[in-house]
Image (tube, rainbow, N blue to C red; front, top):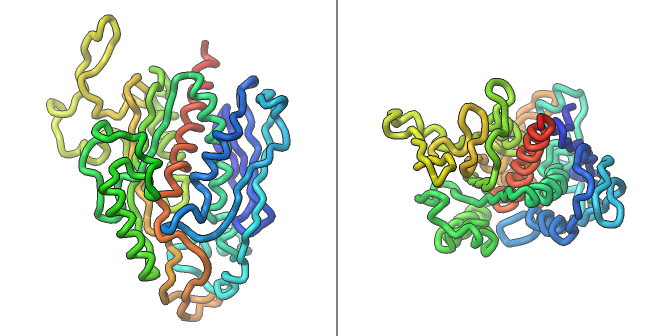
Length: 357
């Protein structure tokens, strides 16, 4: 299995949802980076289950323990090993799923590919694996901050409810002021009400997360293979439940003529700048110094607390009603995951660029 992400800044993760713990090894992190443990733990808290009434009630402290690569609070340049122990598994909740394939889950594909699967919460296919990404992403963020790069993601749509303005129109500092992580308080309240309603019906709902990266220098990415937007797309599509990725104008670009959507250059006191940023901060696969912004579409969670028709491993028709603790909507907890994957990607490409002098 491909369990390693990145080129120079690399994360190899391990662990299952109902195993002993989730952990990872980070390789390629620059030496001398001061690890702000409060910041790192806060990033994990943002992803942690049980943080509000619209997330899974599973209770996990999600406290990270570093095993190597850190001395006197700073990175040493050697592999950083870490682990987060699982403390609150209810594995018995999944006993009725042992012999059946859950609709729209990885059960059938895992069983067919490997001949074995961990039915407890999906094992390796569980979104709990993403906690390792948040640890690595938090460290990547700390490195990027020293380079003047800042990343902010937020919930921009839940079901049919969506923000109708560009990200520049909102105060993104308000993102953490509500359970949905939406910078528009009024729209956030509507989204939270919708999620609560869906949850009360035993159902789930999807939506969109928007991410903005400010301060990216010009020149990250490759002109043919290894385009920066392709790397970001690959990173986002590796997240559980992600079904779509678009940057800049995205699919909307198909509706306009070049005369309407070209980003025209001008001399900004000796610096090259553009009047608009429809391209989303990337031209020809390479960052152009403007804000990078993109959107990530998440499907509704596959596990619903309603009866569904499915089949057993032996092909017999059956009815499954899931038990256990599940998110009615992944978006609030996925915001820090999107940021983490973006941070690792940008840092990776920044380190690649620095090797060229």
